[in-house]
Length: 157
Image 1 (spheres, rainbow, N blue to C red):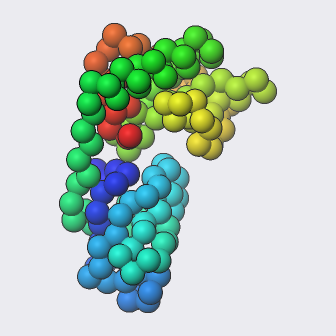
Image 2 (image 1 turned 180 degrees about the horizontal axis):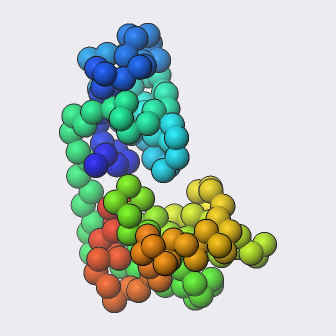
């Protein structure tokens, strides 16, 4: 599974494997944005160009190592506590391709994905969507006593 910060190359079988400056072959690139939607992976290539791809268009070269110090973990827990106090219902996605993403209900009644600071990072969902995701066990109510939830959130930092 690829994630933010990973180093990738263009898959030789990708239809974008055309060796233009926007789709360079045999060139490393860093995933600088990852949104679970078509063409939601933004890669910054070593040649300075950026382009969006699907997962199937990329191959992992080197996985990013995320090291969380105790201070950073405490700060993360404080941010998550603030989210829970402010919005009451905070859900965490446990599906592998979106693991660790957080969802809150906004004032207009829609649900949106946010980072641990509570900053909206797009995509809106209806109550019906969230009910289906909860019933399908794709999201769970965020519980800071569940280490699996904390680990999932740390994986996307």
